[in-house]
Length: 65
Image (cartoon, rainbow, N blue to C red):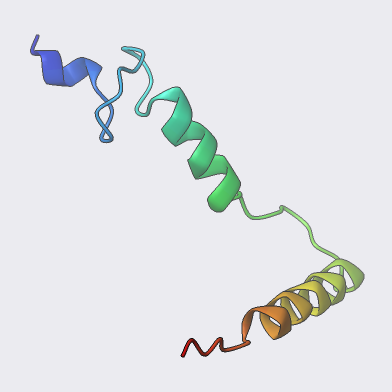
């Protein structure tokens, strides 16, 4: 068994039976959440409204002179 088998893709050590280290597993869950099994129309609408508000605030351009 090589030393690379115990390292994650980021270079941190990982458990033998786990594909990713603790840090990469956390980031995977936070930034790529699993799709909900059931999502009502109300939940989809509220999510769309919050996404629109987030994008509206993020679209400002800053000029530095």
